[in-house]
Amino acid sequence: MEIKDAGAIVFGGASGLGEATARRLAAEGAAVTVADLTEDRARALADEIGASAVGCDVTDPDSTAAAVAHAATATPRGLRIAVCCAGLGTPAKLIGREGPTPLESFAKVIAVNLLGTINALRCAAGAMVENPPEGESGERGVCVNTASIAAYDGQIGQVAYAASKGGVVGLTLPVARELAGRGVRVMTIAPGLFDTPMLAGLPDSARASLSGTVPYPPRLGRPEEYADLVEHIVTNGMLNGEVIRLDGALRMAPR
Image (tube, rainbow, N blue to C red; front, side, top):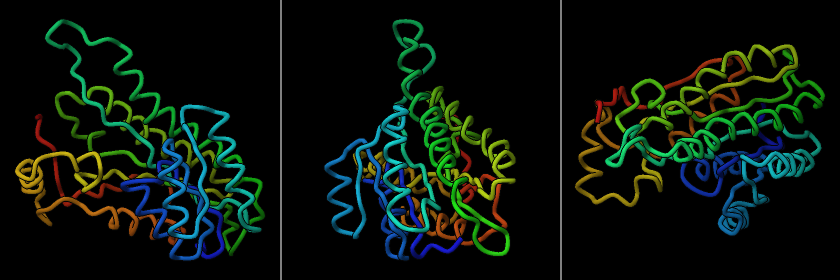
């Protein structure tokens, strides 16, 4: 897929992995829509990189559909690239000090991380299948989801998070198979420990300790490295239906 002049939407694009991806795609000439629940931050980023911004809640069908409709009209080529980085990492054990953790604590994480990904996928793919085919393979678009190595190595306290990311891993192949005949590819990235706002509030000692758990390179991943992989996925037409771990060979301990 050629990035230049392609319509692109990045869900959760105002910070962290999404921000790095929005910056990269814009730098490569895409017409980027930064879609984020924090609309003010999305607009500030969009103004900086020459993109557009929309407020978007991936758990809201109407909000997500409106964001995709905006992105689909941003360039004559239509929406060709969709990256979903929206997510929550709120920890909660199954059994707390006062007994079973309330169900709603798990439901919100699953609603955003899993159902939100499905919602973003269905809306983005729905727009992409209407595009005219491009290139020798007749490609119409590519969707990139964000899972986590917690899908495989979930730690204590990651009940909902690991389950939601495991769901994202699990849907990758069936959705890719479904959309293959329509010229839309579907891939998922499973990041390890990355230097994002989710970890930014930790003390330096804690960050250093986490960095030391990564076999090689022994550091936190950089959001730009996630964006590197998104760019490669978009431009490499043979990547489809797979989950790629981006983790420096890290395998998470139980806690």
